[in-house]
Image (cartoon, rainbow, N blue to C red):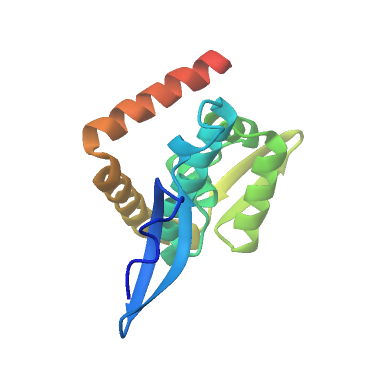
Amino acid sequence: MGNPLQNSPQKNKSILVCTYKQNALIFALQMKSSDSRFSKCLYFSTNALARKVEKIAMDKWKPIGLAPSHAYLLMMVLDNPGAQPGSIAEEMQLTPSTITRLIEKLEDKKLVVRTTEGKITNVYPTPKGKELLPKMKHCMEDFYKQYTAILGTEESMRMVQNINKLTDKLG
């Protein structure tokens, strides 16, 4: 059996092929982002990158049963017990309503508690939340190792610096 993709017009695509007893099955065709008609669009390109990074992050955080955004919020509260939702929102660059939803999810999992005195709300880690810290650090290390293995350490550092500069410029 010849290569069924040899004369295919689908060039510049990543292909996952499974062969069993000399029969090839094609599982996916995936166009490279740089070959898309939208490759010069900031919106398209940043979202394509975000989806790929999110997939790696979700995989690395799966062992502790938290999405990366929940884990980063919990680590902030562990570093700063009594943090106020407004300061968490500012640090994580998320809206206050998103932070409220994340905190509610962490409360449901018994990882944080909120206290309110008048108009001031503070968020504290629970003992169960504190127990997760070593595992969360391990997830962060695995995530870093994964993306630096793909992109290279220097390129990863440059990319993060550039993304932060651009984010700051966009305000």
